[in-house]
Length: 418
Image: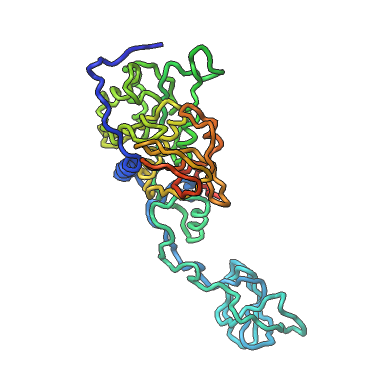
């Protein structure tokens, strides 16, 4: 194992940790200030991206009166003489004479001059005449019933999912202006890590290299296989070279391990060597305390970020939901993630002057959160069965029945929580 260390004089005391809520607000603000460029994309390529401008409709919706049933578009009191047929996609001639009708299909344009639409199942046809009594409520959709031309339907910052894509298509859009997806990379630090096979002989299996890219994709990032590098050797030159290379193409580089100031923790000296500024350096949260977010500005003026995740797996995921999630929301021009409320099924202890993020499984029918077991910083068993982290604020504990915020674990782009 390499044991190269930074000179003792370079080791400085860590600053007081930022409060958890303060840290989230801070990283969201710097992300929003560095929001990614706007690009135009075909509708089919926008799933999971973010609207960069409000979605408006190009016409009234519907754009013309359309029949909501199969039947007869009639004029006058009847009985009615059949003078034609209207199918969806056609423009009908006006009805100009009383007591005339045209057969009409659902979705077809209602002809000018029609006074009602009579349902086919409520009509009879005999001797060339249609008879029946139209319902008192109109059986067609009026122009502008859903929206008027140029009306704002969704604000900028809305995540694009299949429902948004369908709405945009119905409005007549072929492309959408969206924020470019963040490009992310992952550097895995630690000579003690194995990348294959079971842990043994003092070495542990790397669980974050395979897992973190999936979490980043669920937050809307693009992560290629080539963007995951490691384990990086535990030397300062190796760390500097790896981080410099990753920053050449990534908007965000996540690192695992090395966030403390131990003899082989080289992340802080690496950030200093690259001229980074700390946005957050340690957060008063348990688990996950030694996390950080740093900001760098390249020679090209482009802002890049480094998220230092702890080496313990569950602590690393706490860092993702605490710092990376709000940062990425800002970079994508989305609102600050709001935290829903759940009701605790059991008591959850506090962690003194630190925020406690407690893994829970949520019964979505009742909104009840059940604390899960196996939740040590180095454990992933509890995480695999959880839906998110209940937030127990500093200086408090929570009793069964208390309503508390929850930080949900991210969904795939386009998914909606049930």
